[in-house]
Image (cartoon, rainbow, N blue to C red; front, side):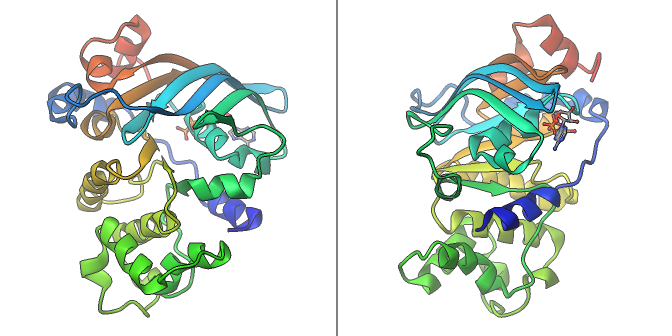
Length: 292
Ligand SMILES: Nc1ncnc2c1ncn2[C@@H]1O[C@H](COP(=O)(O)OP(=O)(O)OP(=O)(O)O)[C@@H](O)[C@H]1O
């Protein structure tokens, strides 16, 4: 995908805010459903952020973020509106390069290679780091072409029919669309469109999947399908998800990063630990709804 198209997709994300307090009351009850925490052996680090700061002109959005994101796990980024969650996500695939006002300091390693090194091609990087946005944004093309698109522009070789089928299966959409692959992706429901966008993102077989509030525009049933899907996707990919919804973070993530105002990463730990026994009083206050 060209930078311009990537930017257009980025711009379609909108800026919805939600009342986090509504989620807070249920966080404590839902954390017990969290996925397999602590039961699997430690995972390799895929992404390592080292003292990442981001400024938009003179305004600092992230303040010295360091963290290690494990392979084949779901890592959630939570925190109040404007604390820099999306900005961090956009550091991983250098989408902030597309924002004139943005300046990134620090290092961010993908499998040991600093993605901000001069010899890294951001377009090639984005092949390895797929992204799904808040608002489903299928192209005005057929279902098949939406999924095949990422392969075509990357000149990927292979059996497109098989890759499209496999991607739609992995995105849990195949059964619903297999008989209408030539119909427009825009005619699908919102939840189906988002799964189509997930299929499109995974078709080129990225290593990392970034998801910026992928379910916030969807109804509860569609949201639940996406949540189930995210857990499955983590078997193949390293998933990093921004969410306003603390229950969702508690349900689907292995690791949680809590950002607070000023672009500070206050705590990063196993999700269960964050929700049941956070080390920081500020994190406890946030997740119990004392502020947000
Ligand atoms: N393109 C931009 N130009 C200028 N400032 C920006 C830009 N994008 C984000 N910011 C600012 O950077 C800060 C962090 O924004 P960011 O979108 O990363 O936060 P967030 O935690 O993801 O917020 P939300 O939960 O509301 O999506 C905010 O103060 C925001 O206004």
